[in-house]
Length: 125
Image (cartoon, rainbow, N blue to C red; front, side, top):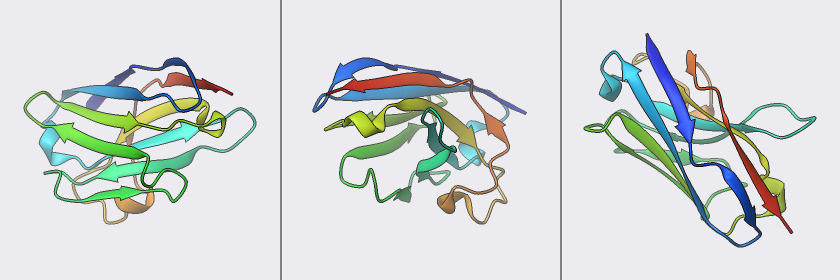
């Protein structure tokens, strides 16, 4: 079992930056691939980024590639999402999630078992 708590959301202007954090507790954090997802009002939840267990590999949705960076600090049981050059279309509730160690398709946003409660990011134009 893994418990996840996101923080760092807020209201910013277009072009600004934010860094989201996700603190994990429970079983060995380093054993879980991690991901970030978002859900905008009236839309389905979508995959944003993922990172492998030891941070050797990262994956991004095309819509955020080059602007967002996912990272993790296994010593601190925390995963981050650095968001630069924010756009109004990035407005959403952002969720972090953990996939089981055996997950084969976490890099495609599939197979995540544990979810945080979400943090709101609002980007004004």
